[in-house]
Amino acid sequence: MTLINGLPAHVLLVHVVVVLIPLTALALVAAALWPRAARRLGVLLPVLALVGLISVPLTTQAGEWLERHVADDALVRRHTELGDGLLPWALGLFALALVVWWAGRQGPAEPGRQGGGARWSALPVRIVVGVLSLAVAVGAVVDVYRIGDSGAKAAWHDAYSKTATGAEHGS
Image 1 (cartoon, rainbow, N blue to C red):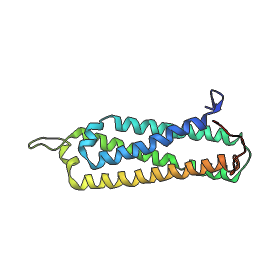
Image 2: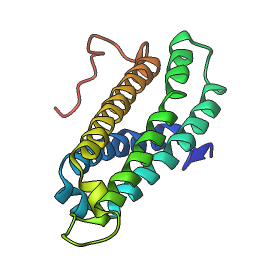
Image 3: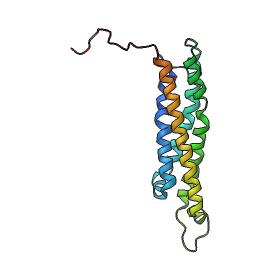
């Protein structure tokens, strides 16, 4: 994917990543820490994480195409390098979203019930999954921020005047 309606696809697809990865991270942490949230989110949690995961390589590939079509610049190279590091975080969000969703499906342990409910409701398991979810969520959001900040700097570093150009709009 290179162009969408005449615009570089990267500048449009990046908005999907910037919204879905932090949203998935927030939903994951909520679901991992509160089993009721996991049950309420249901299959939406792994679906959200999957769409976010798929959007990362699409956006990265579109960005690599765009990189080949702009002037060589250290800021663009830095943005590209940072962008290549998001996929493992998105994969981690998806994997943990599947675990939390599956655990939420198991429901609370019931007396005399056979099956997986008891193991998922065990406090040590919930703590481990909660800590892992929080760590991956924070890492993913911080990485999205760093990538976005570097991309904004690459796109705008010499593209505007710090003083008004004299053209007044709206008067």
